[in-house]
Image 1: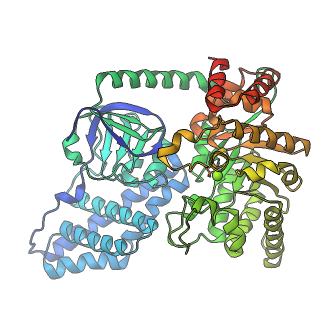
Image 2: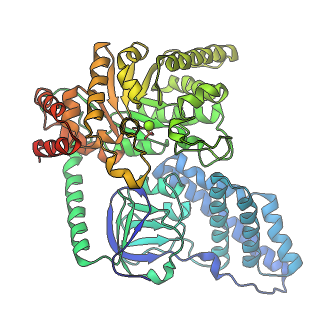
Length: 575
Ligand code: PEP
Ligand code: MG
């Protein structure tokens, strides 16, 4: 079962590499036994003391988490505290103790299971998140009742936590000096634990499935590749050696790159180029700032709409957008409007089955079709812009009409806010993503309508080469080095500059140092990427001058196939 060098694929939840021994996180609830009690009042007292202590612990945890990781991450514990003050939850436990004359631990467990069953009937991802919360609260109360140490068992020495599921409170209490990495059977990119792992800088692979009997794995050797979402169980010596080498290089590179944190991104001849960060939640802002990001080049707002039961209100969005704007101060924050559809669906919105979801009811198309949803987002953005330097960006644009229509809705939002007497910032720069070949081809026309472009290579490659970005079988075809993609990028930048607007790139290619001289030579003004790549790209930029890069761009465009281009870019890359 624990065979040599077993490769398990999961979700790359937090970047980095970890090599070490497995430390299995035991499930607390399996340890509870049912016992008959005679002294009912004594048992109710015990329960009340445990509830009071749990409240104290959670309040303290909420405060330290807010200090360490910001208010947003601390909200998880507010949800836990709410269970403790839920009269139905408490009365249900008390009733079982009194009527069934059973121990408090067992009554708590029964009540938690009752809630889990209730939540399970509601199939949304948000409710599954609530299930993890109630289990977490239950485990806390039970461990207090059992007089156990509440803190998640830590590895005696440095190790890799392997859990069926890691609760948010488990994750926030992890000691990042002892925990080298996290593997979790459940979880997704946007689950709270993954977000916290990224904030703590602990490599994590989640969602690997729950088929493995992990109790048997205690002490096994394991490698985590948090960049690729891979777990190697009992790896062979050569693989350990290779990964040790990669890890050493990563560490050496990280310490070398630290010098760029407070430096502005410039080319070798001192020309200013902006290097910004991509985020999906407000909590990631810190990560971007700590890694020297010079603004937010892409805020993917869809995560705000996920893991919940219903649409976020205008006010809820306003709180999040203004928090990000405030944290970034004068630095820009490009908020992209909702990009739902394709591989990102919302369980609570009725959506038709589509033959080709990536070619279907997606992004701006949906926003224009459902102006109520679109307007609540636009109004929140207009209001939040009083507190910082926000720019608006529409996704998946393929025509001039879409921009005009979206801007009409934006104008209507300004009027509505005035009528409602809500304060907002009238001026708001508007840009679009260039992610369809149509947009790249008519870049000259589109540039007359907006203030900036940001090239989304993830989709631009998908639509140009007709290669589904989420299909593993054809992943090798999803290449930025394809000459058609490069020509479209070059054309987009050229046309934009002719119309006097700037161009950024927020697709994954912006963090690819092989393609960087091509992009620089093509005239790209801004690179926006995940936090972990910012310093590397800032450093890479200092190796090139724009003139030198221009020649490389010209040369690259003469080449006719992907392999040749990649080979050429490898040859000219600077170590
Ligand atoms: C892109 O398509 O390159 C992009 C940045 O958007 P997303 O990955 O969110 O589709
Ligand atoms: Mg996209």
